[in-house]
Amino acid sequence: MKENYGYLIILLTTLVACGGGSGGSSDPITDPVTLITLSLSASTNEAEVGSLITLTWSSTNAQTCSATGDWSGSKAVSGNEGVNINKEGSNTFTLNCSASNATSSSASVMVNGVIPMIDITNDIFSNRSSDCADYDENYKSSVRDLTRAIDFEGYVDIASSETSCTLSSDAIPNHDFNDSSANFRTDATEIQRDFVISRNPSIAEVNSDIDGGSWDAIMINGVVVDLKSAGCYSPSSPNANSDGNIAAGCGQSAQWNLVPLEYTSMFGVDIHNAHVQPDGTYHYHGNPNALFDDSPSGDGSPVIGWAADGFPIYGSYILDSLTGTYRKALSGYTLKEGTRGSIVEIYLLDPLEDSRNFCIDIVGSKANADTQRGLQAHTCYSYQGEIAVDQGFDKDRISEHEFFMPSFEVCMTFNSTDNDLALGLCNGSELQKFTFLTNGNIVVNSNPNLCLTVAQNGAREGGGGNPVHLIRDLKIEECQESLSIYQSWGTRSTKTNTNPGGEYSGIYEEDWEWTDSGDLDECNGMEYKGEYGYYVTDSFPYIINCYKGETDSSFNK
Image 1: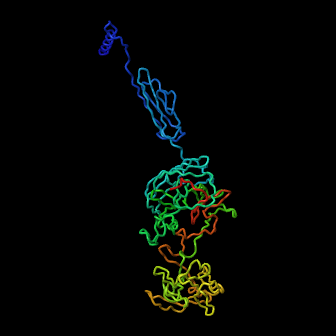
Image 2: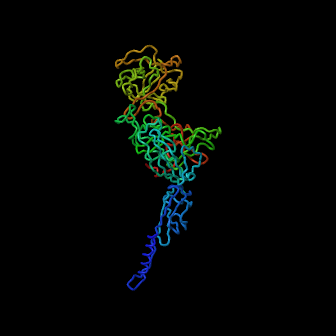
């Protein structure tokens, strides 16, 4: 108590002194300045646009508070309030508090506004609308690179305008990828791209080729389609495998282009028929085995994406108008029959005593063969790496019922007098007409009961080869089941620097031909209920083979 009284005495004394005679100060007395403390916090630092969050604040020594920034109005000196997140990006909330005889204080908090996103992880779609505007939403997914055990967040934003839609994505699918069946040479990564899709695509006067210089399509899940490979037959390349094929480096003018889904050992796709570009782009080469399923409804499978020309891509299933049942759309492309290359050898399917097989051969030795001596069955020379000139036939002429040997410019001719074979200048006569049947028989057109036949007696040795070449006679005999091993033939070609040889197997684009044998046109699409669209198919070309409309430049690589 003594100390307090002393303070008061000193204070009173000071007041008297200050208010005294002419020598004293006349300044007024002021109260000490009070400090205001203020805290402000938000219930979250990120929220969807349009959602409500809670702001909480408290203060000391404040008498009034007001809000600025992304909220407003007078506020209590302490409290909480729900506020809306009204925009994408930074939403800043500031509180200013003051009091008389006090320094004002302010506090701010920022909440990041994000656009609401629809989670499409592993979704199976159902919408068949071809108008991209009907998909105007923001999508997300949470998936895993299974082999690398790394999680990814995918996103797809589709924004529409009066004439088009812009699809933006980070190239991450809405499903797990890179399973144990895959052999990716590059790791998948997020790559942001924007694609412009026409809302009203139209059929062009002529089709446009897929050339590998642009992405062929974009799927609803944000993954691009890139059907063409950069691989081809290039046996002289240092990177060529035992088949003479390379995985990359082939230009647009290359021939014998590899089909990734038919030559999977080189391209290492996962169960979604996808792998990764050198830049990290995950992309499909065929049916994604996602986005649609095997239980269609309505008119068939849903829209799963759009081609670069704006036309929609549907899943595999269509509603058959004749049967009223669902089935998969059929490609109009067919695997070619026969062998690659223009020159083939004709060999007996049963090797008999020579594993190299017997081929139709001009009597004599290769370029020195004598056409006047006719034909025989001789060890096939193709084991030496090429078809010999005296065993080579024009493949295309065979389908025209003419067995033409171009190196000697002669045709196989039926000698009806002796029921054997001769060679003569091609004259189109009936005696030079033969048909190669699907069962392997080569029959005389004028008498289809007669077959080209290898003599049944044992073979004799020729003049060369190691092991020594073998020879049998050739005759025309009645077609009989009991003689099938002597009457069943096949054709084959051998590899050259420009031709992979062998039978058409589907591994090259050139193995396929448009025959209009299915539901779909040459671009792998059709019109249904007045709208054109492409379809996913189980065989070549799998999704799209050309464009019916004009492509947008946003798809350029």
